[in-house]
Each structure stands twice: as C-alpha cells, then as structure tokens.
Length: 199
Image (cartoon, rainbow, N blue to C red):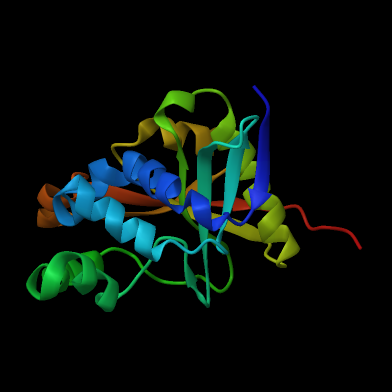
C-alpha cells in the first residue's frame, strides 16, 4: 500500500478527519465531548484544514492526520461559540471550562503538535512515523529548532514511538481529580531537536 503525505486537508475529507481524530482521542475526551455524534459534529466543525498534514492511501482515502498549532490557531481547537453551537448553551459552557483546564498554549520557541492520529485499521504500518517525519520538515521550514508534543500516560505505544524518534520527556503534569473525567492521570511534554536546514 502506498501512502502519500500532503500539506493541508481537502475540505471533502473533513468528516473522515473528524472520525479519525475522535477514534484516537475519544478515550481521552469521551466523557467531556461525547456522545460520539456530538463529538464528530464538533470536530468536523472546528478542524483547521490549513493546520495539518494528511496521509492518503492509493485510493485517496484519508488514513492519518497530524495537526499542529500556530499563533493563528490550532488544528482541532474551536472556541466557545463552536461548543455552544453543538452542545447548547449549558452543555457548551461546562465543556468549555473543562477543556480550558488542559494545556492550550502556543509555544513560540518550539513547533507545537496538536495531535497525530492514524485510522484504526491502518495502525502499526509506519504511518505515524511518516507523519512525524513530515512534521519535522514542516517545523524546519517554519524556522523552528525543536518540536514539542504532549502524550498521556495511558498511551504508552505513542510514547514509545516518540522516544524511538528522539523525543525526550521534559515535564509531566498530574491531572488530579480531573483524571476521572478525562480518562488519564498525567500528561507528559516531550521535545525533539530539529536539524537546521541549509540554505
């Protein structure tokens, strides 16, 4: 199976991107952004097609996405108005407050990844590694010297991949009582230096 990585995401692939993202992060955000139909509607509404890299197979099907953050926004961010539009005034507000307890900063010194996800049927085939490599190129092209991501304690497979790729843990934040809502106890920040481009 051939895989091609594209910069950006064609608008007609938004529903697939929302589903792949929710497959990957529903375990972390399910109690806050569920049920599934609402979560899918939310992500289909908010994903930024200009702030991601897309992995497509030979048939043109979307099989993976890597989002990132810039000063203009984030791949899967959204705001209060988006939450209220999908979940209603009350549901949108309490979800918004909880989501803001998660780290939503923009790192001006390091290229900040906003989620790497691969369709369930295609995991374990090196697509995550291809997306990471494309993220390194994107970060270097934007002038960054390092790349940063966050991984939850429950996602040990992803952490093992990042460590093999040269990422080093720099900080771990405990969730405290919020672990019961978000489904994980801690989140670790990992950083990898980038090789400067010549020319």
